[in-house]
Length: 232
Length: 232
DNA sequence: GCACAAATATGTTATATAGCACTAATGATT
DNA sequence: AATCATTAGTGCTATATAACATATTTGTGC
Image (cartoon, rainbow over all chains, first blue to last red; front, side):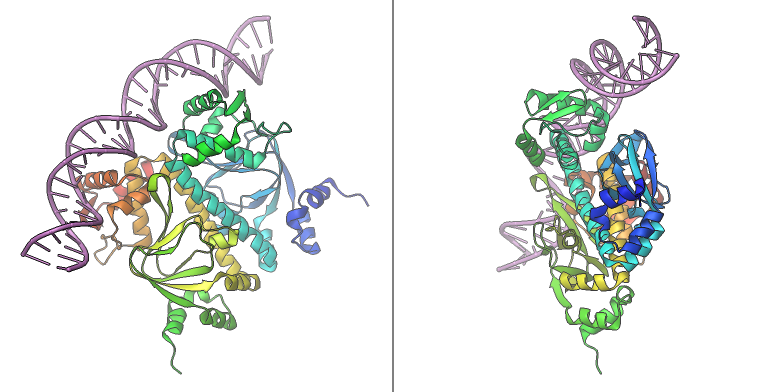
């Protein structure tokens, strides 16, 4: 018997998380799992939309953001494979309060949240999975509030770079961030204007903390970066 | 048979939420429910502590906050009876990332989180209660990030006053906030210095949006306050 | 009721960062 | 290759808000 590509993705990539599901539950998910492909910068869902699907990032990178005053965007969270998103609003019985977009070409699976709801009720391990995820995100969000409001520009940018490293890691050279983003997005992540992101990036280069080649960022002095991030 | 005071509190005040529990589960909670009294400004738990108890606010007011750069405090959330707090860190398997303190003399019940964990696993309604709470809090936290980082001082203070109204309501006159807090706490809620909280409060008074008498704040033009809060 | 501490109020100055204007580089399209 | 659009980079100015200084008022303990 030949496994379908979809089944292969699910059984291989998602094994870790869906291992908490019973076989019939897995079957149910597989039968209702729809693969979507999003192009770079394409919106997956937007603020105000009614939540319908649990999204599962299989390949690519996704940002969650909120549009604020004067079209200024705040990036709230970054996702990497295999991570789940788009469920909070449904569980809160709200519309989405933030939007999700693909950072780069991405493959995402969609599972109806109504199905997820049924499974959570029946499977306490799955309930715990989401309780755990939500709890971690909430802690991160609370910490972010203080970081973004109280740290100065250098601290905020340094922190953003650390976040990028913690989320996407380094390439094989052990120093180049495995994500290439525009200066504007870097600014949106650190709550500052694009000009200031560029300027601050330049001063980090001058201080030999990073090396910049276009959108390629090499962190050469991570301890110093963490220090700047911590001090503020 | 005479009901104990404790049993009375639980069966009356907590009915709404614990109604999702079976009788034997209620019994278990009651047997492990310890009442604590906290004085004004007393710390209930502090950042870095290991989470042990689910706290249930029975009487009084509680703030959750995080100490930031230069001793500057950011108030993250406010609690009123009957609300639960202190569980996030346990579910995230982390130490507390914020502290909780009584705003005024408060009565709080403590239930061992290990017991709550057991109950959640057995009772999916209870699991959903926490999934729902966490999801709502996370949405609020994400919204707060944008509000605090992008709005100007007037917008932030206006929003803080609205939050106070939504949380604690008005007194019988339908306009006096049912909470009295220091200008410093008001500043900590709106991410600004105490001086600026005072100044901005004064300008709201001059604009006939509020009336201030010491710590007593009367909101006389709530639509305008919401407008200022929304616009930024 | 007095002494002292804490909170509130207000004016002045300093500064971080936004806003704007402009140029340079890079990348996409035909 | 030429054109155009987008992104990156830099200097200058404006401004919101912090920081500081100093009254003034209010609350608290004896």
